[in-house]
Amino acid sequence: MRLVTYRTAGADADRVGVVIGDHVADITAAAPTMNALIQGGSKALDEARRAAETGARLALAEVQLLAPIPRPLKNVFCLGLNYRAHVAEGASAGVRASSDAPEYPVWFTKPPTAVCGPYDDIRIEPAVSTQYDWEVELAVVIGKAGRHITRDQAYSHVHSYTVFNDFSVRDIQRRHGPPPQWFKGKSWDKGSPMGPWLVTADELGSPEKLRISCRVNGETKQDSNTEMMIFDIPAQIADLSEVLTLEPGDIISTGTPSGVGFARTPPEFLKAGDVLESDIERLGVLRNRIVA
Ligand code: ZN
Image 1: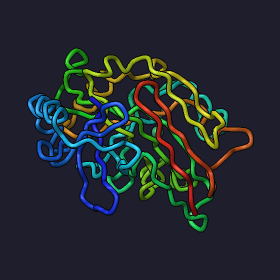
Image 2 (image 1 turned 135 degrees about the horizontal axis):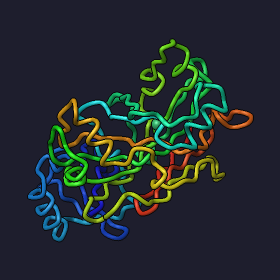
Image 3 (image 1 turned 180 degrees about the vertical axis):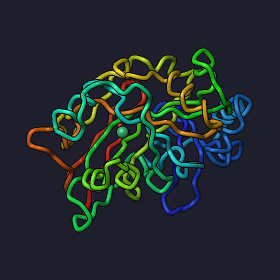
C-alpha cells in the first residue's frame, strides 16, 4: 500500500489515506494518525486495507499531501558519508581529509520540526546563509520495536520506505570545530521534504537496487542507485540498535549519493525560485519550490 497523510481544501485536520490509482481512500476512522497506524502493526495494516475498500475516495490532485509522518515522534536518524562517490567528492572539495569509506556508520539526527511536505515551499533566509544544499535519500520507517536487531532480522522490523531530502545549510554545518558538528546545519525549519507517501515493505519488496536522483530546475544533479550504499539497510539497523531501541515510527535516512551542490565546480546552492525534485524509482518524486 501507499499511505498518505493529507488535508482537504479548507480543513485543517490531518487525515490518513491509501492511494489507489489517482485517488485517495480515506481510512481516518480506522487509523486516526500515521503514527497510530504504524504502531498498530500488521493488524492495523490489514484494517487499513479493508477500510480503503469502503472509504470515501477523493481525487489525489484535489488534496494537499503532508509529510506522511507530519510530526516524527523523535529526531530523524540520518547516516552521513554512505556512498563512496559522495565521500570522494567531499575530499576533492577539501571538506574532509580522506576519501576512504568510514569504518563505522556516521550518525547524526535532525529534529521533527525540520520535516516538511512533499510539495511544500521551502523558505530560505539569505540573511542567515546563502549555502542551502540538496541531498536526496531513501528513508526507512521502522514498524516493529527492537534492540540488538541482527542483520538477518533487520527487514522484519521495517514498516515502509519513502523519499527524503536531507536539506543542509553548509556554512552552518561546517563553521564549528574541529570536531565538526552537523546538527544545526541539518536542522533548518521545514527544510527537509518527505513523501509523497509511505510505500509499505510488502509492496516495495527489496530497496537494495533503486535508482535515486535529484534535479534542480529540471537539471539532474544527483543520479545513483541504492545498491551503491557503503552500509546497507540491515547493517544500519543492526548498528543503531546496538545502543538504542528502535521503535515504530522511527525514521532512518540512509545517506546521499554524489552530486551535491557544495562539491560541484563551481559550488552551487539553492536560491529563491529554484524547483528541487527528489526522485526514487518506485517510491515517488518530491517537488519543492525554494522561496525567500
Ligand atoms: Zn545526508
